[in-house]
Image 1 (cartoon, rainbow, N blue to C red):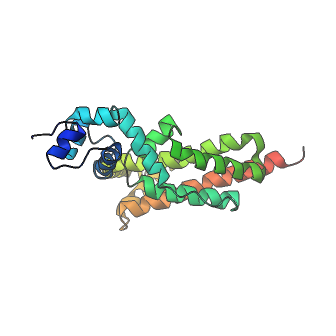
Image 2: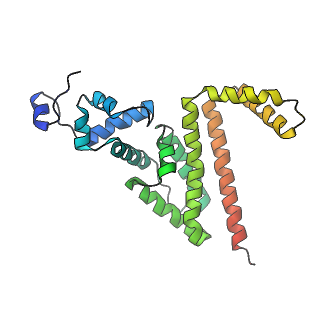
Image 3: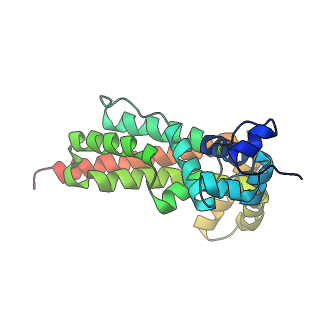
Length: 235
């Protein structure tokens, strides 16, 4: 493929619009939406832009810098709930809407969990979420609770992303556990019944994933609420 020079003057001479950092990140975001965060290279990104890879380094930086910019864009798409909501409703909304956004861009959830809030778009959410918890009575533990809730929820999203890359994994689990239906070990027997029921469920896997995500978030919030109540009780 013939690529124009990275200079703005050369692009204009060729009748092409000037290349910008915003256009590069826009294109990388679309590649991530279609192929996942780990599904494209700088060379593939430069091919989509019809420029030399050096143009990307010139305007944005290396792949890690581009990925940071994508993560910032994605996090900015997650609505920040109103600060006046009760803490449990606030986090239910944030995590539910966060899942919907992150599932559009496979791999971003895992990066957020592993690396943490290293992008500017995350800062308003962190600030408001911790304030909501502080007002609810969590005090100095508010930051710990915030991390626990977001890591729990978004690690679930990362697992969904991984299963989307390996759809055969669901069937393999059911196949392995199916041999334990009549085992004298009650735990394995129960796991076998559950795995087979899920394998036979006519609903699409995505719907089952949402159901399990909602269950996990609700139980995490239950645990935090119980912990708050017990730690606030008079000794």
